[in-house]
Length: 84
Image (tube, rainbow, N blue to C red; front, side, top):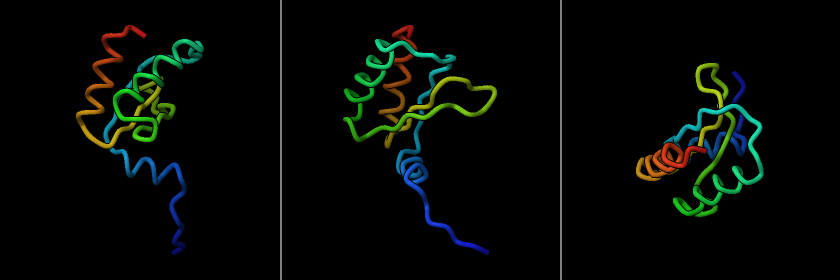
């Protein structure tokens, strides 16, 4: 059995286990990208969150990962209320 070290993506996923989901198909406008980034930075700081494409067929869009459930809930609330 080969033991592989974790890559930077896996390290971030492990460190930030709580998620908020944005169910929307790309492309995102520049203004949308900026708003999403600013909201995540306001909630968790510039290094306290991680965004990645949702890869499951039933959840197209993006997944935003956070360190605490409160941060993920705040981001999910922002996504739902923003209409983005």
